[in-house]
Image (cartoon, rainbow, N blue to C red):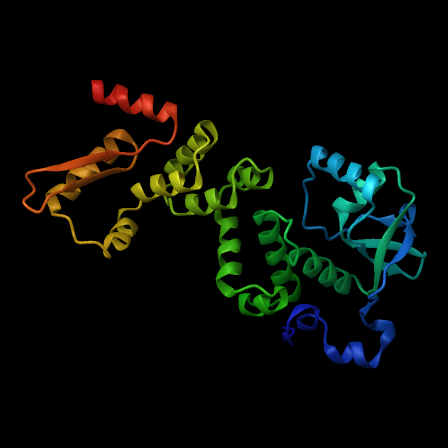
Length: 293
């Protein structure tokens, strides 16, 4: 197993290799240069799989008017004088859409596919524009390809252990929910809330409600907690314990109405209030129908 040596690429590519043999090293050019777009090929290791056509068109229009704000990053293939994209595929596609013949680029030289993989994944994962599933798949690939642990991975990508762990957990979600994150149908916050629901059928039911009723992340978390009573109890420990019969009534009403219900009583329990939460008009109408029965 390769020993992680520090943050970034040094954790995957030995530092002595960079120092002793420049032909086998990863060279970094701090200055950008103009390259013919036709000589740049797609990145084989690109974590991003989906590109929004409307956003690409907007970026292309901006580049056409103002130019490219940030250079793309490529690696050079010495054998055929071509370049392989490392980071900036969205920017490159937008430049092509804008009709540009050349693009500003920073060139890094990597002699092996493993080095190209390391550079491509680390460069992309340290950017902010990947969705959570793309990040998780990139993390998983780095761990598998370089046989490193989650702890080593945190050093490579410069993220906390909890951030890496929480992102990787998203890969435990069913494929249709992962795709919903990738295509911006639901947010990462929605996905994390769905992880709270262990029952597969209830997870799918809540996922469908998110799509149909455009539930907020907060609403999704509240509904998810209803299916996880033991977590709800832990959260409630900071407040005075409710009597068992009041808790039982709350639970019964939550299951009946399919939403969060809170019962608050005075000290003598002779007066109080009931709060029934709803997160859309459809939700509200459904609750009213149940109460009218």
